[in-house]
Amino acid sequence: MFCRIIFYLIVFVFFRISCAILLVLFLLSLLTVFAAPTSKLWLVQVVVGEYSIVFIGVTLIVLLFDIATGLNSFIEILFGIYAIVLYLSPIVRAYFIAQKLPNDLEKAFGKIRGENKLSVPFCFSKLLKSVPKVPFKTLTYVTYDEITLKLDYYNSTIGGKRPCVIVIHGGSWISGDSRQLPELNSYLSTNGYNVAAINYRLAPKWKYPSPNEDTKAALKYLREHGDELNIDIENFVLLGRSAGGQISALAGYTLSDMGIKGVVDLYGPVDMIWGYMTPTNPFVLNSNKTLVTYLGGDYDEMPERYVSSSPIEHINEKTVPTLMIHGHTDALVFDEHARRLANKLTQSRIPNYFLEIPWGTHGLDYNLNGPGGQLSTYSIHFFLNQITN
Image 1 (cartoon, rainbow, N blue to C red):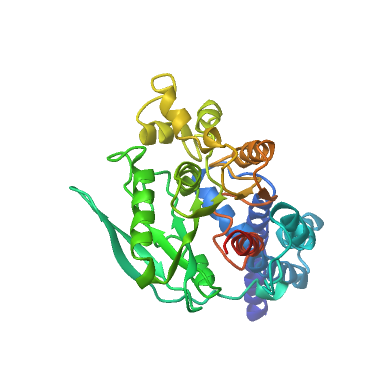
Image 2 (cartoon, rainbow, N blue to C red):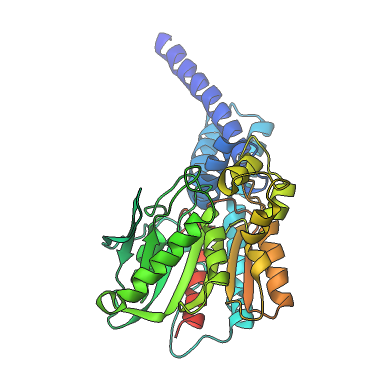
């Protein structure tokens, strides 16, 4: 009798714990639909969206245990089912986006060139796969009086002179480095592209336009060492995430005669004036404070800096093709930035494409094989194939 009581007591305790876990899993699943209300939950949202297949498995195990005990309530089972449906939504939506993505990209950048074959935009079997890393070497590309800047160079695994992608990291212009999200660098190098992931001078010590001067210095260095690094110096693409998206787009639109063929903007702030006038939730990011730190003052104090640092203000008939990738639930940099940039590029007849990830947040490419990661990687690969010779 005593053993039976202990057994039922243990079952009851585990049942109550499983109920609490189901509730937490349900609340987390809401992050596949709604923007994160705080900075810590934003980090959780990145993981939930791109590793949703793992959360489906955990929720299913807890739900089955709950049902097996026979002590569950209808409401608890409903929470579990709703959570699984929401966790499934990024995967299902990625599948449907993938069905039309190749055609959409062909409309924007032309039919796939030559005999090049790209992987499919989305594949269920890749969701739990890891991305192999390739070695890189660290090179010094510029030395100033107070600091020396380095870049990580990934050689293309395909021989001969190859295009080069310059990757510019995020971090609100005050943090981050060249080792940020290196998986894409490895992927590109194994698919025929040299990759140079650069470090740049950070605020508040170094303000705008220091990062753009550093980008120009990196381009100059890579062009001068093109032969030894096997770079086709007339085929550079600038790819930036977050703050790096602003830096890459501004450099791509303002630097001429440096072989820049295109820009990839991943969730970057490209309209600094609109961004200042439309601040984000301060519990996630104090965007106005971030802009003031980077640019050196408020918009009212130095409007010319907000204008000159906005890539959207530098578009003309010679602007290079641009790929924009942004998540609809991004609470750090609103996806309206990408939408405004796409509209202006289209008005100026510049080839462009805006890949909007409905469930995506800031850092949607964190997991290269996640739903958002697969779509963004395919789009980047397609874009590079089309604009580099």
